[in-house]
Length: 390
Image (cartoon, rainbow, N blue to C red; front, side):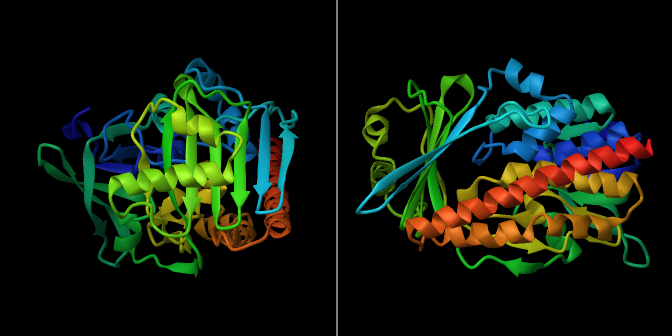
């Protein structure tokens, strides 16, 4: 669709059509709101991601009727996850079967060019006006300073203004909406991990595997096209130095932290280039103001070593959409988000330090599991309350 086909005014304009923005657009549009969803990237492109969906994320995708689409795209079912701990003296593995609960029978780890496309399609089907190749230039403001819309530009250089009842920033950790609206973090992580990851062919694994060794971490995640994602995390910066050194660092971490598969990875066929993320301290930003709101990494980012980013994004899309459509207000959105985030954020930041012994990181994982269980129950309770009200 061309930018000329946009309306002049919408109930909600959403900046960013990745998982957080597309999910929010789908939910708002399905409630009858006039929604504009746009993104500067092309439709169906990939992006930096850890891929893993935790149980609360799958619960929501199933509620929204989208897990069948994931499976139709060949996204493997994950029915087991394992935690592997090692140091200079011992190795220990803890296996966890994914037991059916609240209708969730398996987890998934889709490529983002699969998940984001499914959510964008669902948003369009719900009635949202979706555009790609469009960039936000600025926020529009009313005479009283309230955010009242956006100024946009498409790939040809054409510009226009669009008015909105609310502008929602779903534009990632370096959110332009957050910057222009004046949102600042009120919680900051103390630690960060950098990571490198790549996709490999012909390395099937039986479920997600998470590896933890003092000073480093790694993971193996089955995803689309028969590929397995392997990532390596450590303090420092994978993103600097000669490429050959970064490749050696990646394989060193895999061999040290994941010795059961490290040699296989070193000899396996790459299905992609090696991607690097230099790390960024997590944060919790003010997620709303007069005429604007933030969702996904724009408002709340945990360190990627705990692989909870997509789950946070889908959960917060649900919370924000409910606050808008049920009239509880954006302050309630912030309260609900923080109640389900702050304890997990703190524990995740401790894990990101990579400065722990094995009993300590195992305790951190038990704490995170408890928080994810609380997150799941909150989403179940919310749906039950909505059904009762209806």
